[in-house]
Length: 416
Image (cartoon, rainbow, N blue to C red):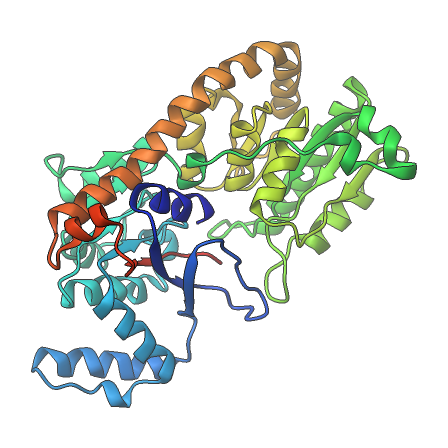
């Protein structure tokens, strides 16, 4: 989200954003430099029942807006005033993995269509699409978008399988890659009695207490994964004098990696150096730590992006195709492993290969990441092109004159 908002401002100047967010923990709030109004879409079922009645009445030109809750009225008004609707910048939310709440998200797409706004699918992943009940709805709703963009080629193939190969689906790269964050200073991060840690081989680690949905023996697979991760970390420690930085991707009152990371840290052998990184660190602070490190292990998607775009070689353990697609874009899919098949031997062998080829992989990333950054920025360029094509209120003149009234971009995405 940081990268997308910043890039829109780079392209358009002053922009006002309405952001629909999906945090269940209301104590967590996102902080942005841009002008952002954030509205929750995790609402009581009664709100969505009234929204459904509003939608049905709207088809007969009957306005039941007064029956909506204040938050839902704010959401409706945001769609009415927006110059464009941007969907799913935070990640995928159309596909079998999200089938239990997918219809709610499609309603937000219909809302943009209802108010005749340009609809832009902003480089999420898409699919898989094997649900025969939902696929007819998906085919109809995807065609409401003016422009379809995915962040990797696997999602493009999924959409072509659903919509037909003649459907234009642009492939760019993940939104976060549009921006870069410099490495944190080791001497500033490790101060006082911790200063000697700056000289160790730093390994940034993101672990995932994955629940293995749909698997017959999820608990056995979870423990197999845990043992494989510990074996990998112990193996690295034997090869280098490591200090492990355990970074929680999730934190808060509802979803948090912190308890699991603490348990895993305590399962490391005595004498292995590790710490839990401050869970309140934002994405830029985490990116700086990944870039400061010598190696990374990522069992979540964005940590894999943070590590590789920080030019830090590492291993990706993926649970959805989005991470595999990213590793393929880098040309490093040989270091991507399916979380459903935890294999300590394969992971340790990959770690040895990375350590032996460390300098050449850094050189490879130094060349490849700027190419991906250019591809990622193409998402925003395509969105701006769509805005200019749908100039309905002197938008082109407003942009060229640097008008005081900011453009309003409605951005809806799964952020939690």
